[in-house]
Length: 512
Image: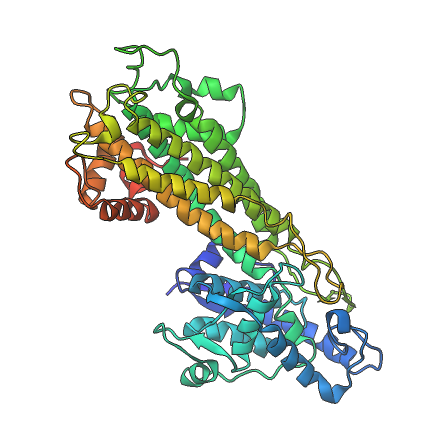
């Protein structure tokens, strides 16, 4: 099994994906263990002094003014975890919780948190045992960290609360730890706070969304090319010299991908035939501009994610010179903004795809295709309601595009009076990415059917490969009306698991 070694300098996006989705094992480097021990010595020295130090010998948040005596400090650390494990609502997905735990471990191993090496090792042990704490949908405001989600994870480290075992069964965490020979941790000064005070949940969801969107943006270039082909459009607008004079890199990449898919097509360029048109509609002609802007947004979000993956987010932090200083690095604004940007871009990409689908189904705008791509229009409804479903998904995408980060709600007796709402931004982005996949699947379904209805015209080799692979995957072609939901589900799976891209790239080579 693949192993990810966690050091002091952060982790990569591929590390997160390997642990969260691939079940990779986690090990602590010798450097990380040494850094953990060194930082802990600093915390222990401060804990022995009479002067109050936030997070070490004081309460938290609005209760930070109280100095906590040594005999109560272990109880203080237990209590912060127990009281903050206050999430509600549906369970969060296993991959999100694994990303959350792994990214918190990444910060702990930086040597800036003051957590003992044995606590970090126990975090790794839970991941390696496949134990996933039960984390709930609601409980994070994206400031002072993803507090409730991280608290539910810390609770499992203490042998409390519930967790899912490797077999998928939810059991008391104490039972799961005992079954895997893992000793629950007894938290000491600062450790409870250090396990809660990070933006790890929203960052983990950002990393996974970026991976998914990388697939979806290339898939959207393919479906747009197929729709252009089915509508007998012109590929002249994809010429690289046209995109060079507006030098957005995402736009150029998207146009190049569409051109690669359309190479050798016998359907393009027929816009001057029976019903001449000077140019194609915006949803066809401007596909690279819209998808390209989204690609550039993804590139910016990836830059932010990479910076966060290299960061140590905690409050207070242990500095190399021995100081333990309070700070505001736990604020989720940098991550929250890009999560919202991506939701906006996803909504627009879904919107333009739906407009192309609607054009394919409208006999007045499809340039010779049957109404709704039906076999016997009137007797058959064809893909009429598939487009309804797509429209409903796009409308939901637009609602999900409303920024969460524009909101803030004060908490902790006005001590935490401006929050990022980054967790909420991440949760709605996951739904947006899921729905965008379905929208592109419906465009694929309509475009492949339309191309097959263009009798006497030969599609591009890449298009032919897509159609053949889709049909082999259970995505049915033209014909009389049938139960449509299974076809759409098969199209969704075909896009979601990468088989669409694999079919295209077997002909074109890797798309950008």
